[in-house]
Image 1 (cartoon, rainbow, N blue to C red):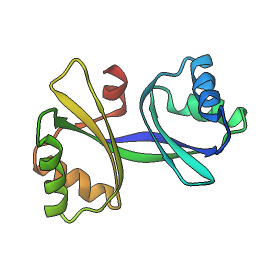
Image 2 (cartoon, rainbow, N blue to C red):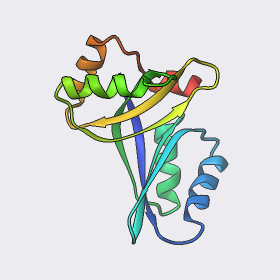
Image 3 (cartoon, rainbow, N blue to C red):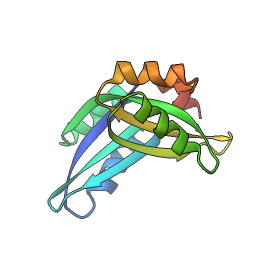
Image 4 (tube, rainbow, N blue to C red):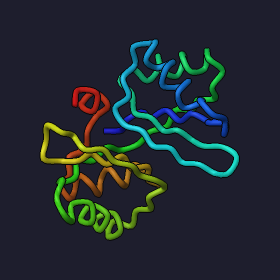
Length: 143
């Protein structure tokens, strides 16, 4: 039920994001979703990729600071109010969202929202109780 995500520390230097994406491309690693959060001095690039361990190794070999965390990928109806219903379920379930990002699956009627909750086990239970589809890493890679 959990999806492995890699997080890469980004120095605020021109070309660093391009370096990361080139490293992944050169190692035949496909990016399925990403998010960049930044401050004045640095950023954090969060990625869902098709080959997590290979990506982590390739980036470390190119002197990037890389970590791996678990997130949940939830299918959300791609319509007005779709995200609101999932967030309302999270609130009613007493969940705290640390961060989230989304992407649209062009071959489906659903979007996919990547969530990092403070209590991942409880989040999975709440989403399943509300009958939301939780995707695996393999399912995301196949989209």
